[in-house]
Amino acid sequence: MPIQIYNTLTGKKEPLETVEPGRVKMYSCGPTVYDYFHVGNARAFVVPDVIKRYLRDRGYQVLHVQNVTDIDDKIIQRAQSLGVSVDEVVDRYTRAYLEDLLRLGCEMPTVLPRARDHVGPMIDLIRVLFDNGLAYAAGGDVYFSVERFPRYGQLSRQEVSQLEAGARVEASAHKRHPADFVLWKAAKPGEPWWESPWGRGRPGWHLECSAMSMAYLGERFDIHTGGADLIFPHHENEIAQSEGAVGHPVVTYWVHNGYINVDGEKMSKSLGNFWLFRDVADRWGAPVVRALLLSKHYRTPIDFTEEALEAQARGLERLYRTVGDLARRLHPDAPQLSSEAAAAGPAEQALERVLQEKEAAFHEAMEDDFNTAMALARLFELAREVNRYLTEAEPAPQPGPQPTLHRAYRLLIRLGGILGLRLDEPLHSRADDGELLVPLVDLILEVRQQVRSERRFDLADQIRDRLKALGIQVEDTREGARWILSDASR
Image (cartoon, rainbow, N blue to C red):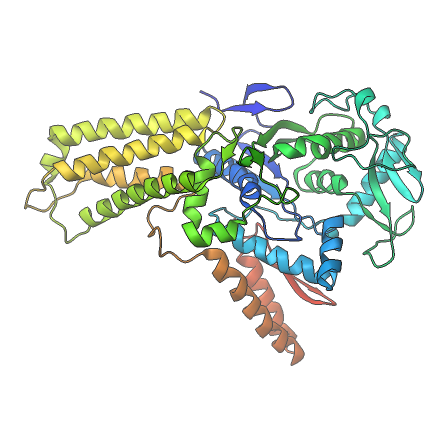
C-alpha cells in the first residue's frame, strides 16, 4: 500500500508519488533566530523529522532542506532591545537552536541554509517577477501584485477581493492592493542592508523560502512542511512567488501541523502563553516532550498540560524499562532458553505472532498520513506484550540463542528510532548531543583561530577540511569563523 499524505492544497489524502523515483525532496520552514524556541515551535521541527525517518525506513533517499531566517524585523528589534548587534543575536540564537534541535531528538536537515547567505538569489528572483509583470516598486519598497496572480488564495481558500490589511498582512499606503506583500524593504537607519537594483535594503520574509527551496531542491519538489499558522500569509505568498517565477506548481504536497494549545488558545509568544522547550526539557526530559508531540496525529491540536506530560513520562518509563530488561536478558552472561525451546515453545510462537502483528500495525499507522499517535500506541502495546513474556516465561538453565527475543529487541529499537526515541540508551542519564556538539565545535574553532594567528595556514585548512568531512561547514568571515551543519557526512 502506498504512503498516503494529507495535502493542504487539495484538502485530501493522496498517495505519495515523488518527482524522482525513490527520492524525496522536502523543505521545512525553520526558525527565526531571535529567541529560544517554544514547545509549539518544536512540533514543526519534529513532524518533518519523523516523516524523514519513516521514508528512509521505507527505502527512500531523503533530501531535507530547512532554512534559518537570520534577516527579519524581529531580529532587529531583539538586537535593539538587548543593546547588541544583529550579528550577535543571530549567532547566539542559531547556536541555541542547534543545541535544542539535537536535544529534541531531531536529526540535522541535509542542508541548513541561512537567509543572509542567499540574498543574491533572492534579488534574482525579484528580477524574474518584475519581468513576469508580478512585481512593482513603490515608496522605496518592492511589492508582489496579488491581483496579477490568478491562483492567489488557492492554499488558504480565500478570495483576493475579500482580503484586507491586518491579520498578519502588513498595511502600507504604497500598496496597489491591501494584500500585496513586500519582496524588498528599503533600508532604515541602523538596519542591515544589501545593494540591489531598487536601492539599499533587505529581502522580505516570504521571499527567503522561495529562493532557498528552489536553490537546493529545484523547481519541482515533493513535500513542504510548516505549522498551520504559516498557511496564510507565508505559504500562500511563497506559492505566488515561486509559481509566478517559474510558471508552474513547485510543491506537490503541502503538510501543516496543528497547534499546541494552552487553556484552549494557541501557544505563542505574542499571547505570552508559551513554554520554552529547553525549560520543559530540563524538568521532564527531552524524550518526554518529544513523546507528547507524537501522541496526537500531527494535524490534531495538542493540549499542553502537566497531566499530559506526566502520562507520557509514565509510558516512556515502561517502554524504556522493557527494552532494558530485554537487553539484560540477552546479555551473554544471562541464563537463556535453548535454541529448541526458543524455536518451538508455544510462548515464543505467540510472541513471534505479536511481533509481526504490531510491526504491521505500526506501518499501517505511519502509511496513513504519518499517524504517530497510532504508531506510538502500537509501540507501547508491543512493549507490554514483550514485558508479559519476560515476566511469565522462566528461562531454562542451559545456554543457547533466543532468536525471538533478539528480534523483539531489534524491532523495538528500530520502531522507536523511526519515532526519534533512542530506546537503547537510558531515559534519564543519556548525554544531550546538542549540549556537547556546539561547545566542542567552538573549542575546535578557537584552536584553529590560534593556528591561523600563527600563520600555520596549512594546518588550519586541514582542520577545516576534516570538519567538512564530518558534516560541519566552516566559513571564515571578517567577524570570525562561522559554522553550520551540512550534508557532507550523509
